[in-house]
Length: 77
Image 1: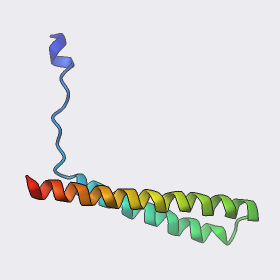
Image 2: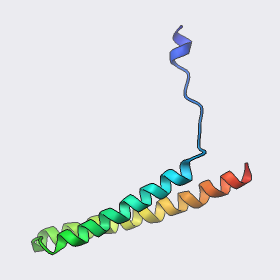
Image 3: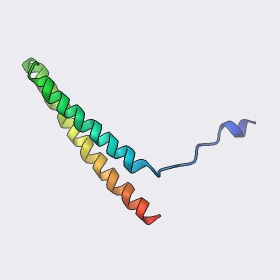
Image 4: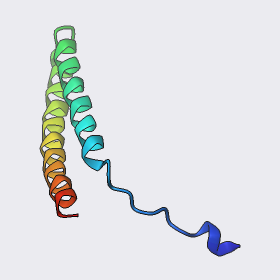
């Protein structure tokens, strides 16, 4: 019985590209919302928003690289 609970789920990567694309779109929407918020923010808050958006841009770059890798892997299989 113990073996039954310790089995990992099979690795299903068939929808990874779609999931990653959705994550990119969500992050872009967060950047846009942050830009809208900046008009009401103090100077200190604006700097924090700018820094966070910079990190979001870096994350988007990484996600796009992952999308390329996943799409390539799917084409190979």
